[in-house]
Image (cartoon, rainbow, N blue to C red):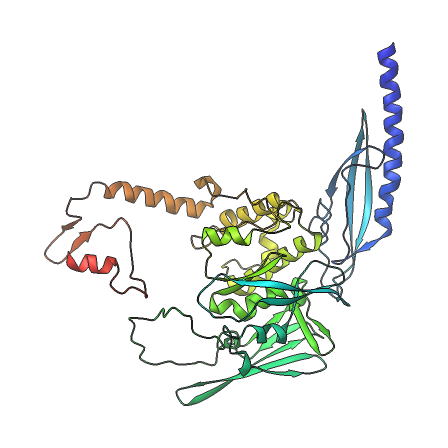
Length: 450
């Protein structure tokens, strides 16, 4: 009887504890949310209940409380969050109705700091030690002053050739390029009022760079250089919940958006890891990746607004730059990976991105190369099995392995003639001379000698 009495008391206490924790949860319904407000879902009640969450609409509010607001100008959306509370042998489900407001303009620069810059590439000479960085409405997304940052990047960009004309709506940037006695004028318009970036030519973002220190055209005869007018482009940032911000005749944009638009065509990138900006060229080597991941935020949870921003930036990048053959937006075909992709846990987030790139894209030229600086620097998300790849890529590797097996039966001479005009030459790999060493190893030379 003593044991039975204790169980009955525990059940009664469990119910009381759950009811008191539910009262606390009701406060979550009293607030409307957008990209500026964090919906913090507790996994432990103040009075002792354990809580698990399920969202009725994870494309608006995820199971972890990440807010994905409607686009600017659209109507608010309701989502139901189901909380399951348990204490002892008692449990109860409570549904909370959450109102999600559309994306809203940012209002103020609430903090700024000069973040140190280290150039990890030798391709461009930059006289730059710090980059002024701005944060809006107490958020974590880094913003850059467009003109200020472009001028600082002289040595990569012919910054002094750029002209800035500020208007009520934003800023117009223009410059001239001379080629073969012809002069071309490139312009781009950064409109804060309608939140768009337009240009009559996408070439605007690729014709203002210095040459690299390495002469990658060495050994090639340049017959002529031609500039074409290029294709017009319009970037609608409202579609991706990103914002231009104008303050005191200065225009600001998210640092990652600045990087992919202004720097992408140079193969040089600014990498931000909270403590530092790094300059990197092309795909970084492992030792460079190790440096990039050294951050005071290493092994910490990703902030709510950064999780959402990272997802939206993926969408912008893939929709405008990746050239996916699927007739749909990134938002449509990434749904199956939302749970991990939009997790604040850096290990889950890395896994979600890894799976999306390797399984969903299923494309030989796309790979997951580096983890976030939020993830424990001693952990990596690695490809260890073909089963982690999509079906098409798996089939390609299976065929490759079959061909490699067949080449093991090749003649010792590494070639054989099929007739007087046709020969098979066997190569284990293919090398090309580096532009910095024209006397180096080259498979073409090897085949000519045979």
